[in-house]
Length: 254
Ligand SMILES: [Zn+2]
Ligand SMILES: [Zn+2]
Image 1 (cartoon, protein in one colour):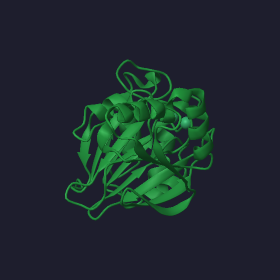
Image 2 (tube, protein in one colour):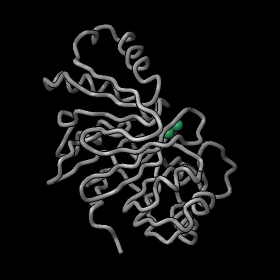
Image 3 (spheres, protein in one colour):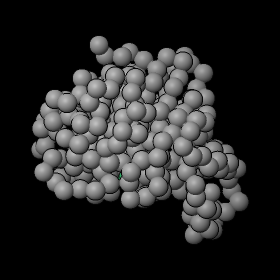
């Protein structure tokens, strides 16, 4: 499995980071390209990959905050222009209404797509050929974290969440974990973790590499201290994610 970070930013732009988006690929395996979340700019990140926006047939949403869904309609429009009108959209309760409402605002797009919407909840399901397990996170909006299994690898994406045992349990045994680390230590925050809180939640878990993502501008200049704060509590290779980075998950770092 390969994971490409299309967007590692959050709702406040940094000038360097798109909003949340991840591309999962399974070279040589049985799964299809999967887009996970689709915030502002993620589609540009997708266009820079070999798969491109034309090559993704399934989008999986973690929750409905704008920084995770705002490129959904631009993605549909770009695919339409490229002759691709079918798309499966998978997400938590309310995803069907969200898609319907968005399309109703732009009525020139109505009836032009062959969309399939599937609402999922905590538990297991399949998406684009991956076996996925979901747990609810602790966030200001209902949100799901996902663990993806392919033939050769396990990857967990926390989505937006405070540091919780549920997400740490979900991630346990993953070669790669991408986790919300929106703010540096010293900032009093709800709905997202600080590095210290994240390190404490992940302590003792079996993890190969951890990428900190969903970075607010407050983290600029703080990356070293954030990595150190998580890394001193977790036995894993802790790094800060960046847009355009592709990680080969099947080669688990020792
Ligand atoms: Zn977010
Ligand atoms: Zn959110």
